[in-house]
Image 1 (cartoon, rainbow, N blue to C red):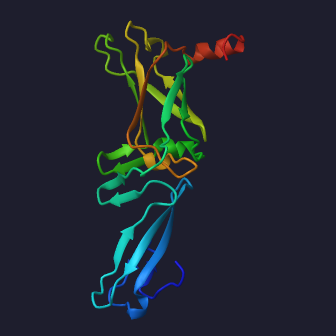
Image 2 (image 1 turned 90 degrees about the horizontal axis):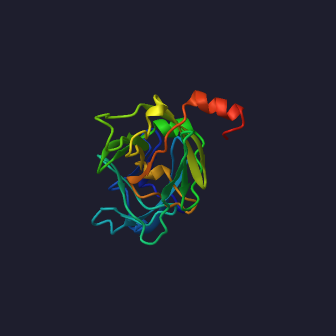
Image 3 (image 1 turned 60 degrees about the vertical axis):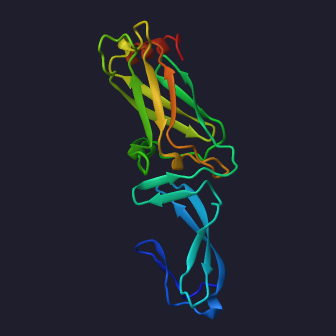
Length: 237
C-alpha cells in the first residue's frame, strides 16, 4: 500500500487490521489501496483488495470501500458464516458427475481447471460455516435408495477421495452390502453436494457456486472380494 501510515495497525496475534480513529492528520487525507492475502490450512491462497479512504480530519471517520477481489469472487465473512457473492463477469467452474462404475469408483470432472488439493483426507473431513445453511461438510455424499426398496431407508457405505487434480477428482465407494445396491427395478443413486465453494477455485481465482448438487444412478455393485478375484483373473480392470 505504499507508505505505511501510522493510523494503520496490524495485530499479528488476532490477525486483525485496525484503523485508528483520531490518529490521522491533514497529510493523510486521500485514498490507499490495500491488499490482503489469506492462506488456509490446505495451502490455498486468496488475495483481496480494499480501498481505504481517509476523509478530512474534521470528520475523523475513515471509510472502507471493498473493491473486486484479485483472485476470486468476493469472500465475505459474516458473524454467522461465509456469504457467496457472485462475480460480475466470469465463467464459473462447475463439477460434473461423469461416471459411476460397478467397482464403486466415481469420476467427477471440472468444467475449468481447478487448483489441485493435495490433502485428500483433510478435504473429506473439512467443514464450513455458511450464512444461509449453517455448518456443512465441504463435500456431502449421500446414497439415495430407489423408490421400490421396501422401506430400506439407507445403504451402508464409506468412501475415500482417491485423487483431486486440476481437471477432476475420483471417489471410491465401499458398500457394506454391495449385492443390495440397485437390485430393484428403481435403481439407487448417489447424491454429491459441494458445500465449501471457497475450496474449489479455478486457476483464474473463481470458485464454484455454493451448494452445487450432482446426482446419478448407481449401477449394481460387485463385492470387493469378488472384484479382487476378477482382477486377478484379468477379467476386470
